[in-house]
Length: 237
View 1 (cartoon, rainbow, N blue to C red):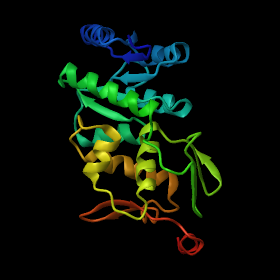
View 2: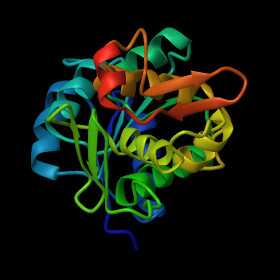
View 3: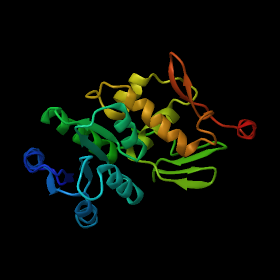
């Protein structure tokens, strides 16, 4: 049986019951909460390994709750909502969500997403050959998973950390979006939009000017590449 704990926040009783039962049957310890205000307090007390959040909630919305949780924790957050257009997905990812599942998705796929996000949190990257990567803009200690950008420590979600690690391991080489998708999220994912959204979020955390990226560069038709930074490049930025 899994010892991992999942906080489920859903205001529709039947849906909450179904999610709780499915996750418990899969071996997780589950706490179900029906409103955003109680969810924040429950997060402090329950200390889950993953949070599954509805968007439309009484009290704090799922987006607000996601933002509050991300400000104090890097646990994986999956948004689970009937709102399935791109605007809501981008809004959630910009507030720190790791994944977005539209209601109506099968329980089997939802459980696969939960498992994939927990795996990423426990094993954020396969691990480069080096213990540390340093250039003139960024320093990554792979043993402690601590990232400094221009001397300041930054907080990355497990997804962002694994994405950065994959690009650093292949620095200087374009990595196709499909390869990043399968390497970071797993083969159960089939939308490369996840890669685009998370690269954009990562750029906002590490680039001097995210609108003109010099570290995480898009090579149109080939993928994304981490360009190792020198003093001259940093000054040019």
